[in-house]
Amino acid sequence: MMWDDKTSESGAAEAAVPSGRQPILLNRRSFLGGTAVGLGALGLAGCSTTDTLLLAEARQVYGPMPDEKFPIPAADISKMDPKYYRRVVPYASTEAPGTIVVDPARFHVYRIEGDGAATRYGANVGRDGFLWHGDAYVGRKSEWATWTPPKEMIKRQPEAAKYARGMPGGLDNPLGARTLHLYQNGAYTLYTIYASSDPETIGSGITSGCVGLLSQDMIHLYARTPVKTKVVVLPA
Image 1 (cartoon, rainbow, N blue to C red):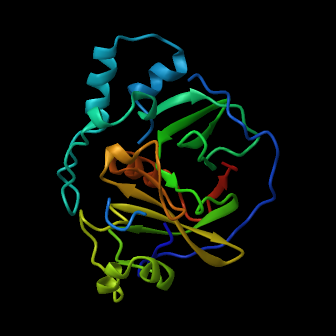
Image 2: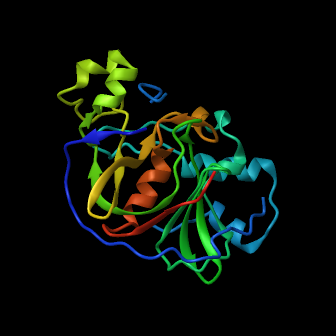
């Protein structure tokens, strides 16, 4: 989704597109048109586990976050396919550690860890007609951002006009708890990687081009992503 907002930090950087990005894979509804632990360790080691154990660990990963400015409830992971749970996976890439790779075709976002591994998150992505690809970078970061719908969205969805002057941060705000704002050549693209509170949207194309992770996953990624981090969006 193409979102504007009124929030913090700025920066600029860009790098050439390297090859070899394909992974080795093991396997707000409103206006949507650490380190990896537990699940990640199992993914890297290639260990098998029972569905009960996997579910128990996922409930810990996606549990409530009561210390947030707006306390975040536990995610109802029964609404999400287990293949979208956060985990560390083997991932062959020439990108530098820390790089974020978005794979909209598989509804996954990867953070390159190096040594042939990546932290993998389930995601929602742009719906048909709003998909894009290319290189960008994190130009700004924001927590509980004010959301301002761009004029293009208001034309498509007139009900968004009531927020033309901005919607304050909160659990109902489409940007959620954390946002990475994507830039190209010094200019804000209006695209973001944002926090979603809707587990049923993970693994689907619903946005106007933005990429959403569950709030717990987005907070995990945000904490490990500095401004100027490279972001690679693969073709869908």
